[in-house]
Length: 99
Image (cartoon, rainbow, N blue to C red; front, top):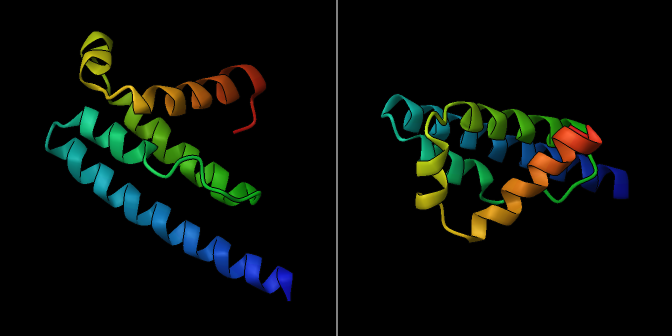
């Protein structure tokens, strides 16, 4: 029964990530990369051990990060609450290679 509940939760998380991805693409088309990154970082990382969810979420965050052209502007316009989340992604990807 627990495996079934986890599968339902996994599908719900994937659905939220897909919705987030569409919103990010819309923001990027409007030339709002900082808003796209904020959207990507909200609710991240997903609270699951499922690798599909982690991977899908990383792809969304990575897409938003790669759209940033002006890093100085990013940090001046990004709320400090996002720094910790962003650094977790940087640490896990660059150092630990989890994603």
